[in-house]
Image 1: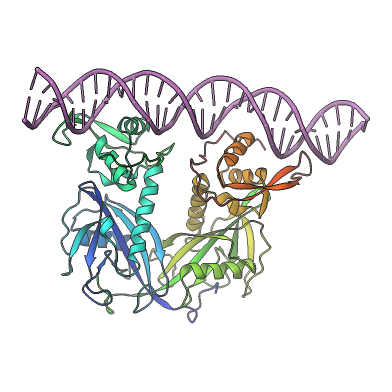
Image 2: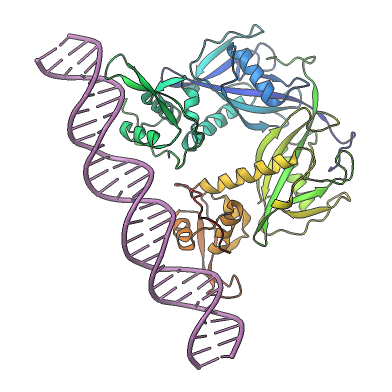
Length: 239
Length: 239
DNA sequence: CCCCTTTATAGTCGCAGTGACCATAAAGGG
DNA sequence: CCCTTTATGGTCACTGCGACTATAAAGGGG
């Protein structure tokens, strides 16, 4: 099996599946599409599609992401390969190998159905169950991966718009992890990490309509967090 | 592209590629095979092969691992999916999508050539350059991944035999990371992590032929390291 | 046999990071 | 004018860890 023998291999269909995650109203949401055909007709599924003959999985994922979200520019968005799902029975009709990606969006636009007529919708993560194929597992893997990478990378800013407050950044951690963080300590940790965030001079913004206006920051050049921001939860969210 | 349309997709060849890593004589080694056919005939490459019609990528990887190493039982070995490489030009003859894995072996057996006649050899990591296809990159990604997982998981024991000393475990970190660690501090950290290692009662072994015999440990049930064992190197290796 | 080297193990000291607090500043609402 | 809300600044103590010293247990060379 070491050399390539034209009689030795079977052709497979190769697709990409996308777990497009965002934060809406303080809750993690995922972009789902309603399937119009069998199998799993009428069921919700992760967006995705087949690789074109001359594109890589990353290119296919970014193309699908643009189609499904309707965003004109998806070049700045965080797109990350999760893993590949290749169990023989995962598609009841034929052998499909799927490369899964996680995409992180800041401000979520309302999805339009893309090129075809199927409906696309932002769904709270907790309500996204019973998806088609093995998409429940892919979605769970995406959340696990993103939650873990929040600990030791600067990934959290990918959920935020270009300018954000530290309270909004903290909400990213609290929402994805499902835990409450101490605000002064979070602030101290973020500001002590060189290159995580950069202050926007003179800018301040009211966040909840009340209270002192918060300073505004931008994402810095750093990508990793040393030392990491460990997930050590208090009991529950007081809010 | 959302539904499956039989006219909408191209079939691809799907392979698995394995970065089989081990420690020999205090250096990281990788299992390479010599290619017997074009393209890249005579060049060294990572072992791998095509998916069979009724197996997953994980099953194919474990099958290839058994064939290439000649080990009868590869069920206990650590096998981990790295990522999938799908750039259109990565195989000059046809479109091949490859799912890459990293495998970690404790005591390295001499490889026999497996089912076919091509040569297989353990090669020091630093000398494994100029591999066929994009295998240089896959191998580099494997080392990066393994090095990172040593920080926050108990993966290091996968490089050790069933019973090992703390000095041998420390050598795993030092070899993969290329840094020197303080022996008492390493010992304190490992023993303070519940479930990382378990003492084998009454067992002791001479390691270098000289010096005090070291206590013997087994891998414990823990899989993650909280808090992590951060890579903060001293200048260079004194040895 | 003694001493030196080598390896393993035990312990100490001080600093950095952080969790748990408390206090103050600056906004809006009644 | 006071209360609530949010942001920000600071303290204190504990933990984990890097750096380092000391002791124990083996073999080697004279």
